[in-house]
Length: 432
Image 1 (cartoon, rainbow, N blue to C red):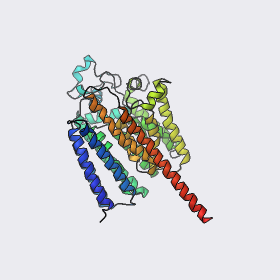
Image 2 (cartoon, helix red, strand yellow):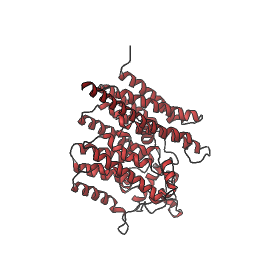
Image 3 (tube, one colour):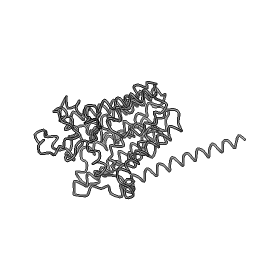
Image 4 (cartoon, rainbow, N blue to C red):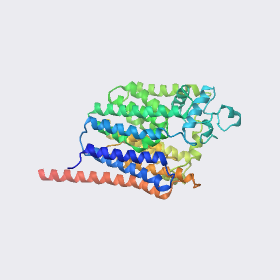
C-alpha cells in the first residue's frame, strides 16, 4: 500500500530530527564527514518535504500540528547549545549592557582598556571587539530591553526563539486569511536554517523578519497604519528590508509613509549626536569584512566597495520597482526577490542573512531561492576549517554547489514556464 503524503512527511520529519540532532550534538568532532553529512541529509529531507507539500492541495490539520511539533523538537538541541566564543549574542549583551550604564554603543569600542571593568564573563568573548556596534537603533533598543531583564546570552536565545515561534503563528494566520493551504507554514518551520541560526545561533535577524512579515500580513488586511509602523520597525532592526519599500507603492498612503519615517526617526532619537544619524562600525564593515561574496569581489576590482555596496541597494530597489509595476495583488513570493538581489551583491553573506527569504518560499518561482537557502548551509564548513588553522575563505567547491544550485533552480523554473506555455499553445491550436 502506497504511503500517504502525511506518512511521507512524518518519515521525512523523523529523518530531519535525527540529522539535526546529530549535527547539533557532534558538529564534526569526529571529522569533516560527520560535520557535512547531517547538514546535507537535513537539506535533502527539507527539499523532499517541500516536494510533498506541492503535491497535495491540503493536509489535515492534525498532520500540520504533528509536523510543527516535530520542528519544535529539533529546535531544542540547538537552543541548549551555549553561545560560542565568536557568536554575535555576546555583542548583543554588550550593547544592551552599556546602554543601561549610560554609554553610546555607536562610539564605545569594547576592546578599549579603559572599559575593561564594564565587561562580564560573556561579553569578553565577543567577536570584533575593536569596532563599535553596527546594529541599527531598533536592534539597540531591543538589546537594552532584553538586558534589563537578564544580561545573558541565554536570555537573548529565549527572546529570539519566541520571535521564531511567533512568526509561525503569524504565517499560519496569513495563510488562513488568504485561503491558501496552511501546510505551507512548514516551508518556514521546517527549514534547517531556522533551527541552526535562530534556536542555535540566536541571530537578531529573526526579529526583523517577524516585523516584516507582520507588516505584509496586516497590509493584506488593509491595516495600512500598522503596516507602515511594522515596516519601519523591521528596517530599524536590520537595514536590508529597505529595498522592498517600492512594493508598498500605492498600497500605503502618503501619510502612512511619513508615519513610517517618523517612527524610524524616533527610534534613532536617543542616539543622535549633533543631529547626525549614527552608523557605528557600518563603514568599517563595508571596507573590511568579506565572506561568500563572489559577485561583490568581482565588481570591487572595477569600483570601490562603497560604490558596489550602493549597487547592491540599487539592485534591490530596482527589482522591487519592476515587480511592483508588474503585479497589483500582494504575492508572498514577491517580497523575497528584492532582498535576494541585494544579498547577491553584498560584501558579506552569512547563512543567517537568508533568514529574510525563508518565510516567502514555497511558490514554484522561488525554487532558486529555496535551493540557495539550503546549499548555503555548507558555508558552515568554513567555521570548522578555521578551527584547524585554515584561512577564512569559502572553498571553491562550496561556492560551486551554492551558486550552481541557484542557476540550476532558475533553469528549472524557466523550463517549467516554457513547458506550460507550449502546452497552452497546443491547447489553443486544438480549439481553432
